[in-house]
Length: 230
Image 1 (tube, rainbow, N blue to C red):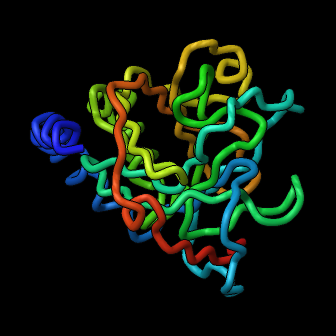
Image 2: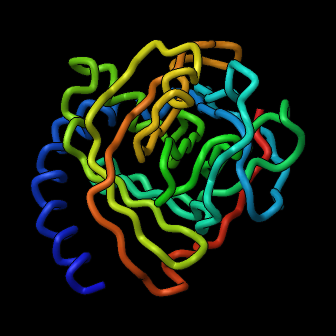
Image 3: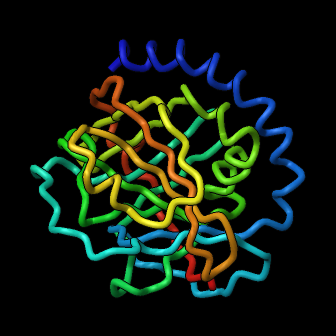
């Protein structure tokens, strides 16, 4: 694992420098932008029920009926980190039914797609709110998110593995998950919304795998505290 962390450290410094301009621009939006949600995740059940009081942009569930997952049985995603955007969230399976509104304070994975290490797309989504995926939305609004290209994404899994990815594409104004379902490569997709509840358009980051290796159990199992928010 030391070699993987060393490689991550060397890649992280330039990624953080790249993100400085984005974070400065984003700071002005953090006080009033909305949440974003997507589709089904897994793990701890939500424990708090307060409603969100600040404006937010949200990511809604997929806009199509997905096919069954072909995942090979690796561990499921438990944590996602984008160091250059200061994102670090537990990842869960979305509680409730298929049409349930996704909770806040966590990211979620789409069960109908795949998990890290499997062929095909791993799809993780979260609201565009402060402390969640808001920095992705904000960065996407500057030069079509060009500065996010090359950023590193870390995804931890329940079998104590860390997968590293590099962002290769920023897709704005997306209205379906067709491309993710059709992608045969091992890829990671992050999704957040572009507007308040009811807005269809989404932002998608597409990333390709770089490396993976074992990590300690505690790092791969952060405590999730999902909050129901509307």
